[in-house]
Amino acid sequence: MFYIAQALLLSKGLNFSSHSAVIAAYGKEFAKTKLLDPEFHRLLMEAQDTRNIGDYGMIGEVEASEAQEIINWSKKFLKAAEKYLSQAF
Image (cartoon, rainbow, N blue to C red; front, side, top):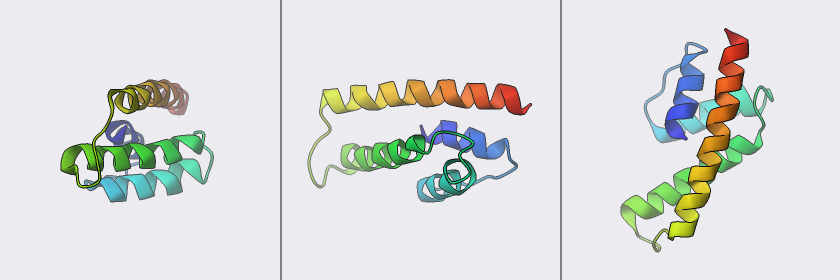
């Protein structure tokens, strides 16, 4: 989901490398303006939180069902991004 958000931002000439900067900029450029469903911003933040748990494991582990749910969110996000980009260019 991070790379989808990063690609969307690049389409506007914006480039950020940190996860937090990409998520914040995505919120400003796409969620607040409703260019894409603001729900994707919430899901992007949740996916980042889950990634941190999976990578650093300080407060638990990521269950397979949680990972599958994020994969499903990612597929929906990718379809929305593809639709946006095809209309924007």
